[in-house]
Length: 204
Image (tube, rainbow, N blue to C red; front, side):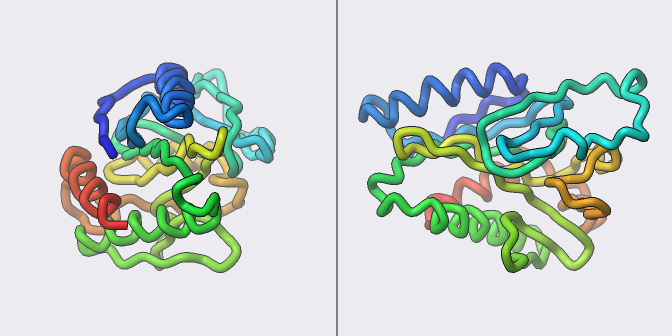
């Protein structure tokens, strides 16, 4: 398995890389790959999402942020600087073709990563993602093509949380969003979180 740091990259460019990599992994021509990155400001909406979760009270002329519809689970979410985004491309044929187990494992890795920074997290019954007592810390939305995973997670590290006020995050009105820095009160570098996440991911 290889981890590739893409730095800050547009959503469209990252999607192109994902689509290329999924095919190569499915054909056995590339090792399983995890892309770690940040995006410039963008909203994305999953295949079952409702664009109505972009709040109509917002003056979008004053907030010209692109909305991209994509083939993943989940509803509307925000990506931007200070947020660690991960796109694992794993061959589920080697993992009993169990998508639900993959989702739970991804949650566990994110929870273990947060714990390394002193943040206590938990799951919520019937929902996908990672929560704290103060709000949601990480969102997950995946797709599967030829039994290879794509899309993935967004973990708020030092994200400007005000952007979440422009949407109903993950289709949940009034859902408070938090970050590692908002919870700990200290500065945490994305690079450090990437290293910790990779360590925890390798252990699953």
